Image (cartoon, rainbow, N blue to C red):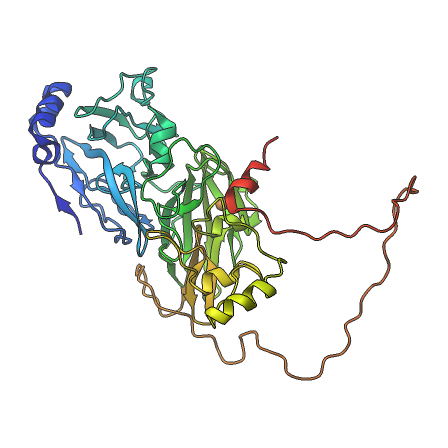
Amino acid sequence: MNTRRHFFQSAGIAGGALAAAAISRVAMAALPEPVIQSLPDTMAPLVPPNGRPYRPVLTLNGWTLPWCMRDGVKEFHLVAEPVVREMAPGFKAHLWGYNGQSPGPTIEVVEGDRVRIYVTNKLPEHTSVHWHGQRLPNGMDGVSGLTQPSIKPGKTFVYEFVARRPGTFMYHPHADEMTQMAMGMMGMWVTHPKAAHPLIDEVDRDICFLLNAYDIDPGSYTPQIMTMLEFNIWSWNSRVFPGIDSLNVRYGDKVRIRMGNLTMTNHPIHIHGHEFQVTGTDGGPVPRSARWSEVTTDIAVGQMRQIEFVADEEGDWAFHCHKSHHTMNAMGHKIPTLIGVDHSGLAGRIRQLIPDYMVMGERGMADMGEMEMPLPDNTSPMMTGEGPFGGVEMGGMFSVLKVRKEQKPGDYSNPGWYRHPPGSVAYEWTGALAEPARSLAAGKSAMPVQAMPQGEVEVQVRKPQSGGAKLDKGHHH
Ligand SMILES: [Cu+2]
């Protein structure tokens, strides 16, 4: 549901007057009203009402920005502003974004379109918009200080260029970037080819989203902005599982998924049950001879990857980042490791007072998700998501690809859980068990040992200390 607010009303009278001074006379004649959308639901693809036709993309838990066609130019109006984003049911974050949301709306145009984008700054500090990956005049590149003065609070700037090459791009500020990206300012941009393209296939489904990350202390609402590596909320389009919608497709569909990474670490994105090919990067389409099949593709910081596959296996297939700490939510940095710690004496004594008392984390972290360990208000449970067979024990960058024969062409709605054919689900064995064969050889070494240690050494592997922080720190080279 889109709500229209008049520009001068939403900017306030003072802001409107300031903005008017900052934009050209042509633009002033009819600045398009900003379209604001604040629901976190996945909106239906925006079928183009005018201009060259194309099959629109679906933005996961997001939407596409409508435009006004004016003398053959597609005019958009972005408003940079503070927003409240529901990251998962019951978990709201105070972010910065565009037009009511973080991330901002997807901008969709066609190769060769002339595009004019009004950017109104309703943030408490200056900003700019960089059109990541685009070919454009240098002065439209949005690097404050280098190619333009920054957009001061209350001002509106105009960007105008021709979308010269088809592909998947992103937009984000290039002004106080660390703060503004840590606060959620970013969006996707898709330029469709103007005619049949030898390297861009027609697809039945086209889905896009951004990878983003936040450092939000459990119980608080606003991200830490000085964080460089210790992010604890790993999200797709500022949503965390189970708040991320599933990707619902029809059996036999050719599916394209476009993902851009604006976090500060890489994400190996993994799909179950299918192989895909990387068909495009932010540099454009990948030559066919350079494509190979994979089930995981690593998306580095500032990169975009476009993957394609035919959805030819029915079911509910996990689709997630393969860094296991990125499929967890709200890992506090101070949760101690309790695995292997013997609480029996202590627990026994506490049970005299509280009969059902149990120590969390003794057997691993799964307990914490299932037991709904008490957490401060406004904290996403670490791992949640209830599937048809129990807790999924996932959070963060996780969703499900749902492939169904009954799904109607073009219908992106959620078909519910997959009904497995009888006899096709893993089951418990209740018969007799033979003794498994074990190799008892200690192993040989390729070179003679120079000095043996005094006595044998045995170690216990410990669970990582605390989620994302420590693991990402280990990546320094
Ligand atoms: Cu990841």
